Image 1 (cartoon, rainbow, N blue to C red):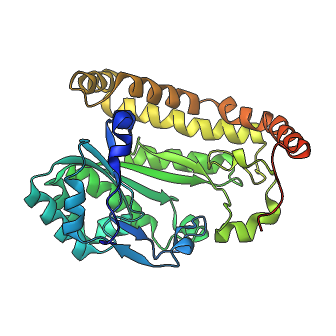
Image 2 (image 1 turned 180 degrees about the vertical axis):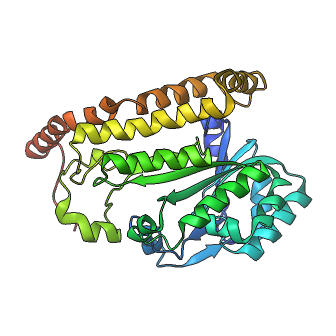
Length: 330
């Protein structure tokens, strides 16, 4: 991968300041490795890369990092620190370079549990936020998505990051066949861990995944707009409106826990301080806060289903009229 050309970042220079994540901007994206050896049934990455994992050398990564002007960098690797030895070498190289950024990375809880010293090494390279695809709160749920991990690792990784003062964002998969008590269990997990930054996706069989092979016959829509991992495309055990009411309740609950942990005043003061120091753009903050409010309403999700019939009818008319050529490619 060291032989790949550097990204042509000059092509987006005029609007690079508009890129942001979690209110932070400007943001640059950087890839240091490709692929994943794990075989989660909802994911197509390992199939696309045929279970291979390839990486750039620490020297190449630092050279590319030196070309990035943005103070915030989202490392797009599917699993950062997959190669622990390289993770250590890379931390040493970044620290030696004197380059300091706010890094957003994605990794697994079992890696954090086995190698917490990696987190400490990377704290010397700048600030850091870690995205954790925890997926489920119990071992049975993890087995259902072939995660090859344990709930104990998930819990311990959260404690490690909290003890080290490192920001983290866990994400969970909500199953369409959940009952009310399943949503309640996840809320209680958030209460117990204080993980108020949690996010939620709806289990979605995407083409190219094992889950699609298993569930394709049960998919109840041909509207690809709904395949965005925030809408149910499989039958729900609860009535759809009630399912989305419970899903919206998860988003509401995380905000309530945030206020409980930090206090509403402290949360607002923190946002104002971020604005004052230009770490956050007002427009991005407004959009982010608006999104939190939108996700806390069940009609946000239901509206897409109500609009689905008209979208499909419009697409069919376009095909019939010849506006869209639906013939297969040669």
